[in-house]
Amino acid sequence: MVIAILPVTNINALGASRRDTVVTPHPCPACENTKTLCLGKLKENKGIITLKKDSSLFKCQNCGLLFRRPYASPKELYEAYSKVSITNWQYSQKRKDFLLTLKLVERLVPFGNVLDVGCFCGDLLGMLPSRYKKYGIEPSDSARRLAEEKGIIIIARSLEELDGEEIKFDLIVLLDVVEHLLFPFHAMQKLSSLLNRGGLIALSTGNTDALPWRLMRTDYWYYFTEHVSFFNLKWFKWMASQLDLRIVMLEKFSHFEGSILERWRQLSQCLAFWSAKKCRKYGLLYRLLSVTYPFSKVKKWPEAPTTRLWRDHVFVVMKSE
Ligand SMILES: [Zn+2]
Image (cartoon, rainbow, N blue to C red; front, side):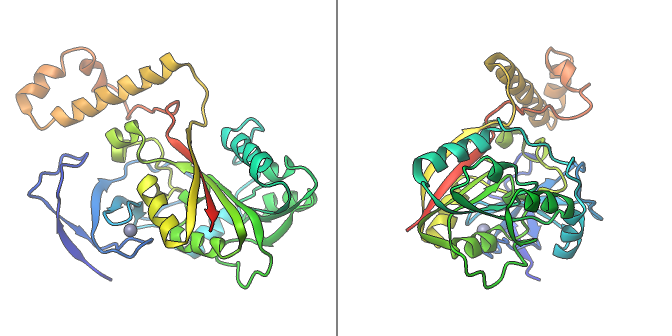
């Protein structure tokens, strides 16, 4: 195990000063760089994966990946995901990343083999016309059975199980999947080797570049226990350059519908929370602020505010060169 003691070069969301040092026992799981920065403990512990230990958030200063450690082992993860019930995740046909994928297929993939990684019950593939050959990877036993009943060919239960696959694909889709992967770069490497020439990989996930995410950092709403890797444009550019892929589309979106007014109201709550946190180290200023509206309200909030209406997800399409 590599242990690096690194100087913190900027003030992070936890208020660490420039003189602090951070011990990082966790090299980056994507680029293997040992210069990873600890951004602090993750408080959120809701989710379908039971974590035995508290985890912290790390950031790789080379490729930009954010990741949670310590975490469950691949075996524990597989066992947990294989038992996920079909009612665990509900999919709407109006889901934004489904609609973006359908639009992409209509424009750029006239026919061919489509693989949905984490296809669950086969909802997305079921929306594609019958001229496509539809393949899936799915660990949940009950969801996989339903997908098979819809005519989807399951080629593996997990990416780890996928080995020596001879079929090549024109489109590989991973919607809200990469954040569940312990080793996202290895996964993308494996999948990109399965693309036909000119084939596409389309994925959706949270975007750590989103303004409220950068402000809230370890308090952001997205840290469910099943989420272990967190991405941004820097990482996608790095990954694409490593795998000879070209980013051909990048669109920000939110899974939730709401008015612009409500979206900005959520952001203003997030700003108030961030300001109060920043001022906490200035004793007198914080005491003055904490009796002034809106900060007088902030200290009564039981948990950090959420900004789910903000476009904090991203849909990325990459093309094999
Ligand atoms: Zn890295």
